[in-house]
Amino acid sequence: MDDKYVIAFNSSPRKEKGFTAMVLERFMAGAASEGAETETVYLAGKKIADCLGCTWCWFKTPGMCRHKDDVPALHEKMLSADVIIHASPLYICNMNGIMKRFLDRIMPLAEPYQEYHDGVCTHPHEQNPEIRHVLVSTCGFPGLRNFDPLVLAAERMAEVGGGHLHAAVLFPSSVLLARDPCPAEEQLDYVFRAGREVVGEGISEETVRGYSRPYVEPQAYVDELNELFRVLRENALRKS
Image: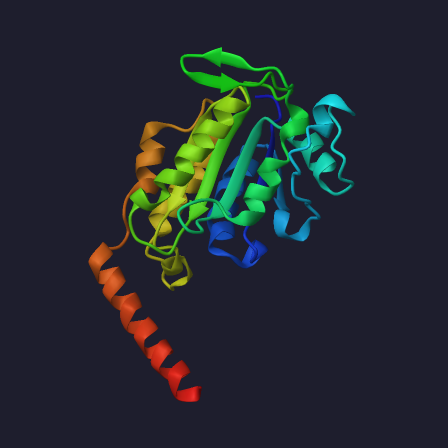
């Protein structure tokens, strides 16, 4: 197997200390165990300006954004990758603002021309369509349905770039990942396996089922957290 380059963009403001990082690290360790070169970029530590929608990168300096920040160097990494992981905690049913700001800046990698197929428009794009795109996300709510808007957005963005979303690694009830012993240890083992598979034949359906299995009863989880939040709220009110 040729050496693969796997890059992950983690947009959690907690960087390596967040729950998203806990899941992502298992995935990257799996890829590294198969000989892949892996790199994780913490977007919260990068200078990323807002896209202005000015089309400067299309018609004034094609392929080059007017902003002078860290994004062009990150684009270079993307263009040389075999696997790209976008890792974001779920904020209000979707990716967080740091990830959205980064993805908004992808315009210089695309041509302005449009291609229309089956009701969907895409742009000719510099990225290799064989690149495997993977989504990693965590949230505090129980249940995979909470991720539906995020998964749809990730699928559409991959499609616009001429590719497809290879897999989504989603962990609801993520606060339990910090519990000792971790109730999701078996699921995290499957995440490691997914990292191994992504640089080979691809992530199997069996592996997806493995890391997607629930590890907590939703109502019991909600009741436990609500009791904790009630105590925290009462303590805060007493101090105010």
